[in-house]
Amino acid sequence: MIRVALRRIALAVPILFGVSVIVFLLMTVLPGSPEAGLVPEDATEEQRQAVRDQLGLNDPLPVRYLDWLLAALQGDLGYSTQRRREVADLLLQAWGNTAVLALVSAVFGIALGLLLGYLAGTRRGKIIDRVVSVFSLSGLSIPSFFLAIVLLGIFAGGLRLLPSGGANFHDGPIVAVRSLVLPVLAGSLITMAITARVTRAGIVDVLGADFVETLRAKGLSEFEVRRHVLRNAISPVLTTSGVQIGALLGGSVLVETIFRWPGMGLLVFNAISARDLLVVQGATLIIAVTFVIINLIVDLLQAAIDPRVRGAVS
Image (cartoon, rainbow, N blue to C red; front, side, top):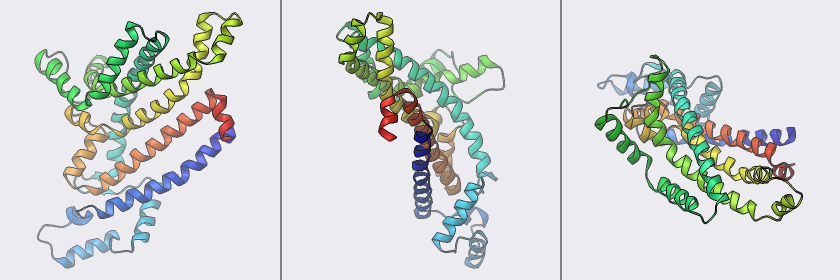
């Protein structure tokens, strides 16, 4: 298990390095200039060049990348002239809000998806299997932003049962839960649908394996047989769940914007609108790192659960 962890970590290092290079290069080709917010609109070209020299923007590209990378490794992602705050502080606050929404959405979506997929897989061809299949296909077909607008119109605009947006964690747990309900329902739909479909497929595949009949022949109860089936079918579920959690932690721009949730998605949307390139650069890097770390954790969990994975990488 330690060898698996070390190999996965060793593979993650060049991936993160490559991500940092791509993020930096993408930000250099985008329109707009980092010094625009530091000089007046009527500034002369000499004044603009002086600011660029001070920021190191006239240095060769490899030098600028190295300076940025070393600063980023120390937690310095620059200063947002539009927000008048350090980029790292903005990202830390936004990532925390997104993490709350993402984790609640992931737990809700994955748990319900596992339950529905298990029921459909163990009752293949029956009514509940067909209902779950229709439900999961609908979940994949309905865009999350459309569901967000519908939920907002019904429960916030029409019935006025839930708040229309914002994150309120300071007025007690009831208010916090109320502010989470609509974003979680909108954000977890795709996670729930994918988990249900993958779980069902895994259950059906494992139930057809020869070892299941062997377990029954040895006298194991149906509950013990189902437990072994679920353990063998969980590996692909972990893979898809890791991708979904990474996507949720990256921040859903449309869902967070619709519900005015102060997370990574809304921060990136506002930064792009304001041409705040340093915030966009830092947010893109954090989202990419989040994906890599989540997938690393999922790989380690798969190795811990499934001996076949450990044998494949040892």
